[in-house]
Amino acid sequence: MSEPLAAGDEEGNLEAVVRRRLALLSPTRLELIDDSARHAGHAGARGGGGHYRLLIVAPAFAGQAHLARHRAVNEALGDLIPGRIHALSIKAMSSEEAASPAAIVR
Image 1 (cartoon, rainbow, N blue to C red):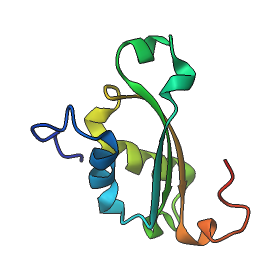
Image 2: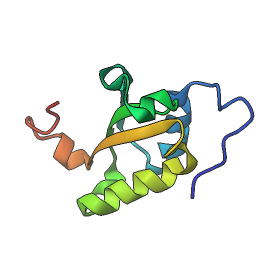
Image 3: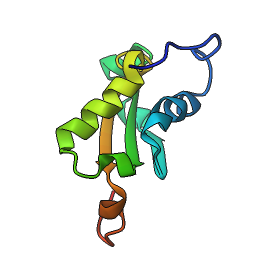
């Protein structure tokens, strides 16, 4: 379950809020990339919600199915989706998967 936004978080740094919420997964790598400019004019962009790509590497994902990883991320982010985040592309890997030379390809 995600924590509610603290006072000031609504206007605060979204990446800091995402990092704080995903900390429960103990990520060893976390990148949040804002792709909103690529979606200018899209209804979600007009409504204020951004389009983001998330790369998260965490030992907690070892042995988990792709869908379970995405559910864990979505649950942690809670009320940010939809809202401040209109669309989120998630690449969630275990530490072992990320160690593969071809693992992190954009």
